[in-house]
Length: 312
Image 1 (cartoon, rainbow, N blue to C red):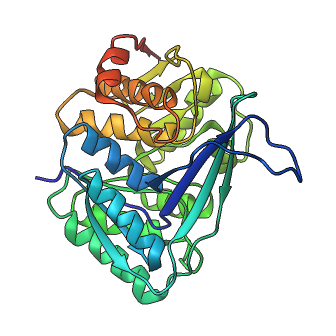
Image 2: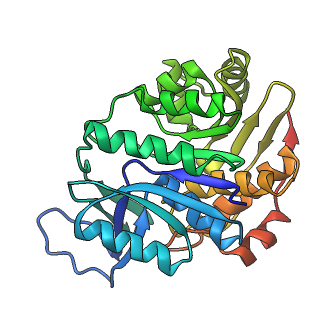
């Protein structure tokens, strides 16, 4: 049975490369490029598939770039369900500056989806996810999609007694939280923007997450804190873990790996605390890698032994 079904409303053909230094107006001689299927939900499915758990990735796909994206997923063994759209799937470009260890990310807006194309994505998510443990929507909405799209999906998931996981930001996040989700994964910046306040201390961050849970907006808040680690909060349990010390090559995709590790562990029956630990290990394994930015199973198990979780 497929345990995890993901939806990526604005997927991308991700092209990544590296250069010594990014300098304005100069011709920058880059390293060999790496092309991969990208987008929040797609990345989560790719990680779950690497960990040998069944998953299905749903996404709108159009034009030549959409075909390439589908072929790349097939090469990785990811079961995909592409929704045909009239416009071209977007491309995105990432440059890693080796002298500073910084990433420069260039994200195009993506195709405009018609109402019928949007409905097809919504229907596919509900139909293909009928027997799944988790329905996961991750990433931004493309042009033309209403801000309540994820809220509609949350309502459909709730009606089917399914756990809906969301990783997005802005108005679409606010609309979905008003309905209620199983888990959402904000960064600290996204949580501050959501609440309209600065959260500089651990106690402020914990209180903010508990308020969201207390209002019924989410059963689990998985707050990523970058180099400071992460926090996981429910109505009954709260945990904090520092980042695992590894050599960081690129931080792109760390959040997707964090979510994938948590859901993979929960789907196989682990406790919430252990799942949090696997999320931390998955994120750490990802930042060690260039280009693909996905955790390797051997690294996941090794790094899991280094996780240090403290109850709050």
